[in-house]
Image 1 (cartoon, one colour):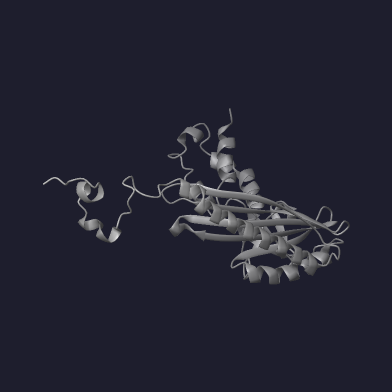
Image 2 (tube, rainbow, N blue to C red; image 1 turned 120 degrees about the vertical axis):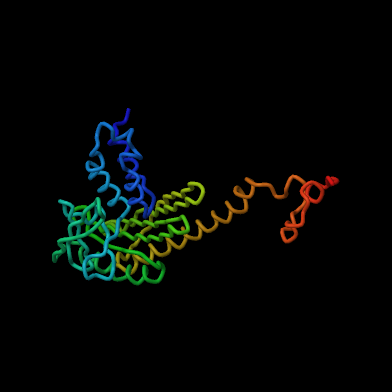
Length: 278
């Protein structure tokens, strides 16, 4: 049987976009008494779960005095809960429980792919600003500086309308083989009078013979446009197919209700078609 810590950690790691604070708010002794009765300070022990969630979800944070958010991921981790941003040449400490940054310092990345990563960043900046209304992006030397990790994360939260969503793209470019591989993940949660969640994971692969930053981003753009179109077709198919099949096309009377006259209907006679009672 799973331990209480493992169960609560799974709640954290599975939190929908923008709802980690809501999950934590529910972790009071009243709400999870059965899980915490033997470990009253269980929430304080969830540091590893918070870190895993933030790094896998590409948590974003604005540094003091900065206008653009930076990304938290395993690809730009320095150890000791510190991360760096190549574009602004800084490193920062990140509190995984509160999702706040501090202790910002200058940082100079080193490695054979640093200049390539900067070239990708320049092209990526223009692409993201054109196609995403609210997104963060990054490019980082990875695997001992032999490859470049490219990340795009876009969040859109609308809790007043009971939905939140996140788009995550991760690509690894290997200049030695000119290969670009990665995945696109979409996570949307709708929770008005119910609980519906869309989770997708689309693998991506391409060859970039020229190996330039512009060419890499051009391939990313083409792949993401194609996937966006696939999603749009899928939504249309669901609306016109599976979702429509879940409900009647007409009421049991086989007649459409004239809603502008509904106030004057007499239930038995006008809707049912039978003689009304006097």
